[in-house]
Amino acid sequence: MASHSGAFSLVALCLLLEVVLRGTAETLVPAVFVFGDSTVDIGNNNFIEKCDIGCKANYPHFGVDYLNHTPTGRFSNGYNLADQLAQLLHFDESPPPFLSLSNASLKTRMSTGISFASGGSGLLDATGNGRVCTQVFSMTEQVRNFTKLARKWGRADLISKSLIFISTGSNDLFEYTDFSDHNSNRNDTVFLESLVASYTSFLKELYGAGAKKFTVASPSLVGCCPSQRAIAHDPKNPRDIDEYGCFAAPNNLSRQLYPMIATMLHDLSLELPGMNYTLVDSIKILEWVFYNTVIPSSNFTVLDTACCGGGPFGADGCNSSAPLCQDRSNHLFWDEYHPTAAATGAAAKLIFDDTTGLFTHPINLQQLVEL
Ligand SMILES: *[C@@H]1O[C@H](CO)[C@@H](O)[C@H](O)[C@H]1NC(C)=O
Ligand SMILES: *[C@@H]1O[C@H](CO)[C@@H](O)[C@H](O)[C@H]1NC(C)=O
Ligand SMILES: *[C@@H]1O[C@H](CO)[C@@H](O)[C@H](O)[C@H]1NC(C)=O
Ligand SMILES: *[C@@H]1O[C@H](CO)[C@@H](O)[C@H](O)[C@H]1NC(C)=O
Ligand SMILES: *[C@@H]1O[C@H](CO)[C@@H](O)[C@H](O)[C@H]1NC(C)=O
Ligand SMILES: *[C@@H]1O[C@H](CO)[C@@H](O)[C@H](O)[C@H]1NC(C)=O
Ligand SMILES: *[C@@H]1O[C@H](CO)[C@@H](O)[C@H](O)[C@H]1NC(C)=O
Image (cartoon, rainbow, N blue to C red):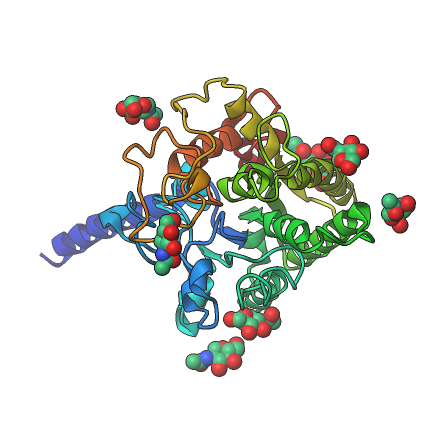
């Protein structure tokens, strides 16, 4: 009897172990750590008291297509790019917001990932803080908090196999365009170089804490989002527009910045042993949609107007009393700044298994995680 029940518990234990192991071994990387702005924030800003309402997304219509139609802090109708990339790596969704975790749970969460992303933040500490959002969780703080935790945790082996996903830089371009419009002394090259220098130091800090695999999403054509189209087409003060009908000035900055980021990452990977990366060319992805090439399994027909929001281009802001479009699957933009879940879902698929070499350099995400 004793040996019988012993055999039984052994079987039960094996079954249990199998479930546990399969549950964890299924993901393609041990953990995902997310850094950046509202394109990937999943609720950190909810926990920043001084962060004003315009920099939060924890009220309807945000989340209208998320589980139970819940607004979570995601600047989207549903899952955002961080969620969708995490799902392609076999996680349920993005790792949880750092600021939502207790000290006790931080340690256990390190083994599967944490999101440090904060809407409104940028590569420069000043971005978001004060001028636009009152207070955000800056990239400097995001990176420092991660490296501090990583050192305390002491599992550089697991961190080196995990994915660092960063999406930042757009807010720096928005604010620079907004605030330096009439500044004749402005020197775009000097400004863009300061962004790249800042990016370099963040990547080095992350590498110093054990990170080896990086996916970096470059800022897209930020002048094409509804808020910037509305500025450019303001009849009282019209600005130069480009071939897509977008605000030319910020798009010009994005186009100059991309090759600078590409060179920086290439050089850094030669300098830092074992570093590998996927650089996402977000400009190419957007242009592909504009050129009306069909992104696999999508059908965008509304490319310039927000789904949620009133006014020209739907750019007056999303809230519970704002107009909401019926079909979120054919809109490129959810609100005045952010893409729909349909758009980021299509982008995530391209990032994961781009075989054309047009959208990811030098390798796609699938190749990166397999290294
Ligand atoms: C959490 O940890 C930080 C530093 O690691 C400490 O400053 C803080 O007091 C801790 N919070 C609690 C509630 O223990
Ligand atoms: C960690 O984040 C908090 C904000 O929640 C910030 O006050 C603190 O300065 C950060 N720590 C570091 C080392 O940057
Ligand atoms: C901008 O700064 C760079 C580097 O300092 C300099 O080479 C360039 O001439 C400047 N451009 C303008 C338009 O002042
Ligand atoms: C940006 O604008 C400047 C003139 O303002 C132009 O010389 C340059 O070619 C543009 N760059 C890009 C990448 O469009
Ligand atoms: C990965 O990184 C190593 C060293 O940094 C480099 O030699 C190798 O070519 C990279 N692999 C790919 C596929 O880029
Ligand atoms: C494409 O549009 C049709 C009609 O609006 C919709 O039913 C379908 O779900 C869309 N496809 C995707 C992949 O979103
Ligand atoms: C709600 O959104 C509408 C349309 O975008 C806008 O006109 C209105 O000012 C917003 N309301 C608040 C309280 O922000």
